[in-house]
Image (cartoon, rainbow, N blue to C red; front, top):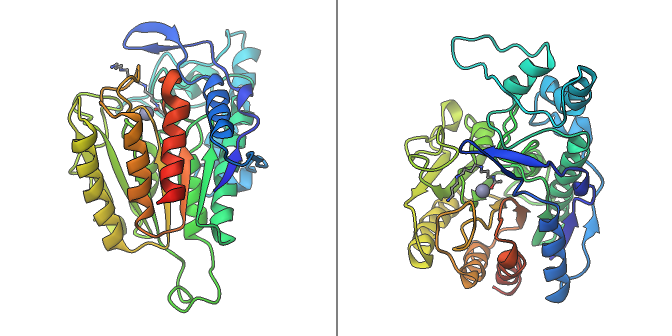
Length: 351
Ligand code: SP5
Ligand code: ZN
């Protein structure tokens, strides 16, 4: 198991977010990475490999040029305008309004869909580091490794082509999946005539709206997400079962909205259905958006999984027999985060 680290993650450390109308401490903290690293070392995993940051050219595979320019420079422009850091939107271009981005406040609403993705001076540096870790993990699969873990921070699955939100700025898992789908594999008759297909399995508590939207019209990347039903949980506006893909992508997006309080047994049953759909698709590679906010004690979650469930999840995923990249997403129960990540990775390693 190769482990790739976004070593520049600590440059991103926003002071607060606004959740359900309250100013609260930012849950997606640098401490999360320190906790995971300590647990991995304690469990005997090899030290992580520090990945090079993703370049603008790497990111442009998925994200728009105007959005990347905004992420890179929006914070400096905000501060130059005399606004107080970090960048938070206070107005959004809902339907009927114009998608302006020509002053710092308009840009913030144009490119951010909630109040959980403030942009600080170091945010873009950290996000490029996370994307680089995911891409390095994908490259490890192309080099023949059967599994890799990208310890990405900030996470990515809520980020779309031109939209930040939910602690996410660049979609690390989508970048990795797209990179794998565009790769050329030589010496393999089955795949010689076309690019390989990829499945993304999203097991974060929240729907992976960004990943879904990025691949919604593609049939070379199957997106499958298990998550709290958006009828009652964030991100509210996407993640329903009737979202099945569009155009060439019709039938290649699959959502499993789950009820509040679901336990290991219920969750693992839904996971088996998701894995069957992936097996039926027959991809060459698997990318897992791994969130641990499904844990019973998670402050942002509402499911009831225990630590051992992650070991079972790891084993079940591995039974697909695919080269698999695990990409770190959410997980905010700090006292259990290390054990939960270790359980998943041990499940993958020892299946
Ligand atoms: C990567 C990731 O996990 N992002 C999550 C962002 C969630 N932000 C909004 C959460 C909505 C707050 N609801 C509190 C429910 C407490 N049970
Ligand atoms: Zn989440």
